[in-house]
Length: 416
Ligand SMILES: Cc1cc2nc3c(=O)[nH]c(=O)nc-3n(C[C@H](O)[C@H](O)[C@H](O)COP(=O)(O)OP(=O)(O)OC[C@H]3O[C@@H](n4cnc5c(N)ncnc54)[C@H](O)[C@@H]3O)c2cc1C
Image (cartoon, rainbow, N blue to C red; front, side, top):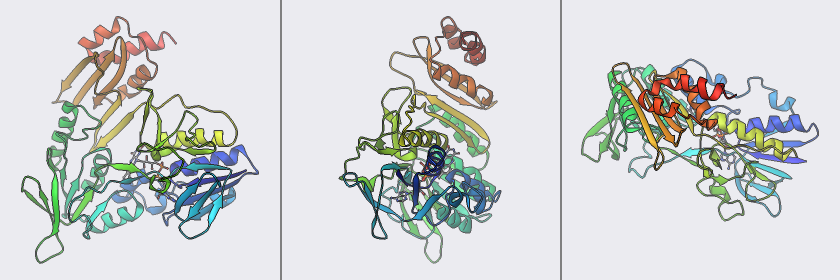
């Protein structure tokens, strides 16, 4: 059995290892287009903070790990997939035949259509190469403008601030992390960042980036006309799945690659996992992207088992994000924005930087947003994933949302 895996991030690596465990005789080829050994993007902030060196980001630390497992690592770019001939085309020329194919190509940062995006000193924060460029420019006292305050934008702020830069963040939405946090929570995160010395511009858009007269510095001009001088501009304006090489082919895509519960695509024998896959959504029953590493790894394992001939199904993914923004921990779960006809309970304690918002459908908790309540993360997840019927506890939670732990013990644990 010849297994070909496109993409050597966490999903690709875990799939290759799982395939080896399932089949000692299988031929396994792992193709990646970046020049480094397989590494973890989520370790890049630690690299930028100086907590680890580049080898600390590598997914597997021993140099002969892949050779030892007889996983053939190929550095190349896949330019197309011929599902009829069961072969992938390589940028270097030639092609590779497969019996089973896994597409684990991840996603790429969106480049907003801003004039000046191609100037030296404007970078995404996505690859090892990006991290090296940021480290070179983000010296103590240098001015950094970050475009976007979403999930990745908030994660990298800590690394930037720890480098002693003067940071200004520009976000188009009316609050920080608008696609993950309620208006109250996003505004609380903004206040927290401002108290740490970060300039936050919401409802704001960078219109142009240009070089300042007579020097290396950049000027980011906002739509309002305000001008922000910068030594470095970091673009964190969202990501899109890497599917361009599948265009015109048989593998069905929406934004990402559509997969079923076994991670198989519309083409039998072709699977997808990780950031590139649109997977079964636990809350809605539809398909959605949920680009976080734990999901990528679990999907890769499920795909690999099925590629190896075992039948394993995912029960769907609950949207779950936990975010550390300059030390303020926030989290959002499932249908955090609420559902039609549902009920909402909201507790706001700005002084203590604590917040809890619960969303109910009938007597079932279907979504939540929290700030500063790390001890409740497991309980909120348990209530939502378990679709626990809260009965009379629903009304108590509407009055006192912080009773979630008691509700869990009474309704979920007692039932179990
Ligand atoms: C700065 C940063 C911080 C993050 N922090 C967190 C965090 O705290 N928690 C969390 O859960 N997630 C975090 N993430 C997200 C996490 O890194 C991704 O969810 C994870 O990397 C997805 O793994 P993947 O294997 O699907 O894709 P990737 O890791 O993107 O790997 C895909 C690989 O495929 C390669 N590839 C793409 N197209 C081709 C092609 N045509 N041919 C050959 N190779 C190709 C890519 O170059 C890449 O190397 C963070 C991401 C970033 C950038």
